[in-house]
Length: 314
Ligand SMILES: NC(=O)c1ccc[n+]([C@@H]2O[C@H](COP(=O)([O-])OP(=O)(O)OC[C@H]3O[C@@H](n4cnc5c(N)ncnc54)[C@H](OP(=O)(O)O)[C@@H]3O)[C@@H](O)[C@H]2O)c1
Image (cartoon, rainbow, N blue to C red):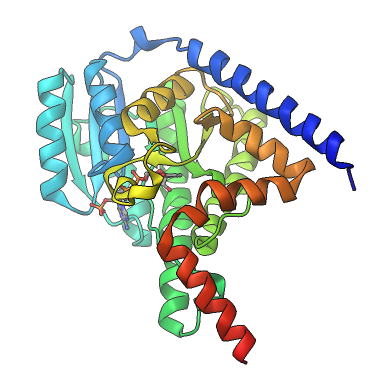
């Protein structure tokens, strides 16, 4: 156990280091000039971060294929991408939680785009459900909070990536998998979702290593570890204003990480420090998560109190 002064010095050191890493990452954005005409396929492009990514790539002159279930939303995003200067815009309605559809999605996207191989595949879609582990009482709770995130976030992502590899290897392409800080440090109310994201790290770290020894090292694999991002949905919670990173800024940083072929990127940059801190001082990370996030949301405070009183009464 570390003494309090040593813990404080270590926490301050990790903080300063993470700011330096964030600055350094923010400064490096190579190969943007190579984007015009490149085929960028984005899942979860009907809202939030995926929508903003679509606008960024369209603005750089890429050909974008947008994937999600809500086709009306996708078409609205597609229209904006065309205005922003995309070389081509295609829409593909796919449920990434349906195994066959997820596996077939890359080939369908290539066909939809008129035969263009995939240069960049961004697997960004996600199913999210909020629950304390203590609230998982029924089979339907289990399905919603544990089974569905694994099927959509993990299995759907893995299936699409595996199916896209032959095309990515023809283009020396880039595979980007969107993860979350919750995969790396304990996150309240999202255990099932966090587990589905953590599984992505094990799978794609192994895939990257295997690509290197099987003659497909020309395909890069980037895991993007995101902290709190100010999408419309997140900003509905007033108490989180001021701590979430603006979604457009997040999308810009994600493009840079993809362009740099980074193995793992942390957005915002301080997440790098939080993850390192969690290895050495998990108590400090837990305290930070609780005070910066959980205890600011009145509904969470109430639900924790209700779960605690339920246990006390049992
Ligand atoms: N916002 C944050 O603070 C935050 C933090 C950490 C990580 N992330 C990650 O960032 C990514 C984007 O999240 P976001 O915040 O932008 O969320 P969002 O606005 O809810 O977007 C999620 C997207 O995923 C799509 N999607 C959900 N289920 C799907 C399915 N079964 N098949 C196909 N598409 C599906 C949705 O489209 P349809 O409903 O139209 O299908 C939507 O386009 C996710 O991977 C998330 O885990 C976000």
